[in-house]
Every structure is written in structure tokens, then in C-alpha cells.
Length: 312
Image (cartoon, rainbow, N blue to C red; front, top):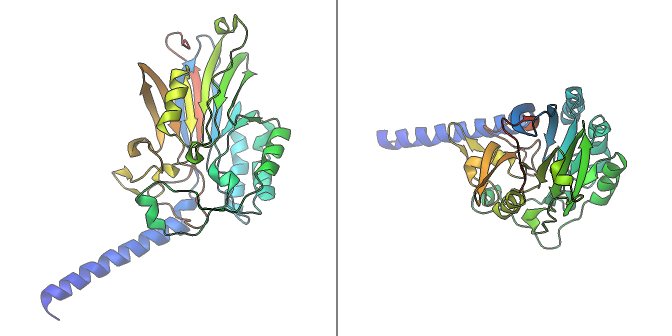
């Protein structure tokens, strides 16, 4: 073999070996390196006590995921004031009972939730490279998941369903006004606005929080225009397979890739709102790999703003 051909073959072989090693690492190791990202967000009215909000998203539970179950159990040790679940809890027809067992310690805390597409429909086997060319689409006649059983169990535990609805909750003497939507990725979102309350409710201490599964820009805009002071979402998996030093290649929606995970500021019509996008906890059972994007739960500590927060 000529030297040039030998060099090209060696280079191609090196890339193939590196790719295989990265795939093995991402599928066997990194997808199980569960961690907790901590953030502090100054959005509460002056004089409020700090509040700990645990943001869960994209658990994509499959029966037999014992390591994930143990880690979810351990999150109860954080003693959050509130749990916010932004959907895609399931990835298997038989996942609801073990998912509820995994979340049982957390369900003793107050919580709110919205669904994602993988709460309604089971994932399907498909070419993983299509994920990098366009947002995923729902197949025709998808297999339905037992989401109603999960919703009922969440409700029985006291977690509030925010699917295209709003509701106020009082915690630690502070009123939390929530507005949530059904999954924007399925175009089921119907913005209900924030709770109106009484004629004097705006004078009471409160904070407005928007909750969605998929952070499509239209959803972020109507939360922002509605006076949200914090927005929580998931769906992106943080890109799931990222390039070290660069970040996500895709967000699986119209959110810019640099916002695919983490805490950023969303701006619209002159208002700026903190936006937390979780990189998620799991993956589709047909694409069980993460690279340079570890699974996470997010513990947000809400603190008083330096100056009074007002909602328009």
C-alpha cells in the first residue's frame, strides 16, 4: 500500500475508533452520570424567604432503571419547597408503576407538572441522524402510553396539573401564580394567561412562573408578555450529544442551540425573564446515549430581587 493510502487508512481508522469509544462512553457511562445543577434566581418580592425549587424534566423512564430510581429517591434529601416536573416522564408502556415508585419520596412535597409528547406516545426506533437535521416529528398512529394513570397518581399526591391552565399556590406565605401549557412540540399549547385573582391581588406578594415542556419561542413570548418572572422548560436534552467546548448541535425546537440548557435571559417586547432549560434526566430508550451533556436535575434557589419585582 502506498504511504498516502496507508496514512489515509490510519486516519480513518483512528476516527472510527474514537467514534466507537465516544459512543461506548456515552451509552454506558455518561448517560448514568446523574447530577444536580444549582442556580440562584433573584425574582421574589422584597422581604420574601428564599425558596428551593427542584426542576425535573425528561426522565424517560424504562422499567429496570435501578440506578436512575436510586438517584431520584436521593433527590428528596434536598428537601425542596416545590417540585416542578416539565414532562416526558415515560419511555415504555410499562413504565408508570416503577416511575411512580421512583418519584414517591419527592411526591410528598408540593408540586406542579405539565406533559411532554413522550408522556402521551411511546418512542419509536428511527435513524438517529435525522435528529440532527430537523426537529423530531410524531409518527402516524403512534402507540399511546398510560399517561392518564400517571396524571391521576400525580394529582392524588397533590401535584397540580398545569396543562393549558393556570393556578395559584401559596407557599411560605408567598403566592405563586402559575401558567402552564400542553406540549408545544405537539402544537397542543393553549395559553391560559396567569391567574387573575381578586381586584387587589396584584398588591399582595406574588411571583409569576411559566411552565412548559418544549421551549418554543412562541411559548416563551406569551409567558413573557403575560408578566412571567421565571420560565421553566425541558425537552431539548441539552442537545444530548454535544461537542466539548462548543455545546449543543440541536435543540429539537426553534430555540437557539446556545440556550439548549442552563439559565439564560429571554427577552421580548422590552421585558426580560430568566429562562431555565433543563438538560433532562433520561433519553429515548432507542437512543440511550449522552456525550458532553450529563443528565441533570436543577435546584433553583429563588431569592428576593434587589429591587421590587412587578408583573405587568
